[in-house]
Image (spheres, one colour):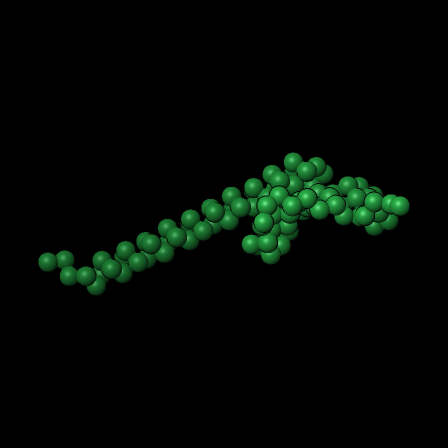
Length: 89
């Protein structure tokens, strides 16, 4: 009996590490990280388990950076608006 093409390792309730074994379509082992919160793979076709996890960390670091920049832009706009409409007396 052969092993299944994909081995699933649940990291926690939100993250799942998947090992895709070689088959006719792809002759190498690939590692994937699926994130339930994002609803998508965030570490894709990495050569090792560790590389897939690093890709996942990089994905969320980039998302945090984007959200922080959006927050700062919005805060600046709100502060400017409030400064225009609030009586300074």
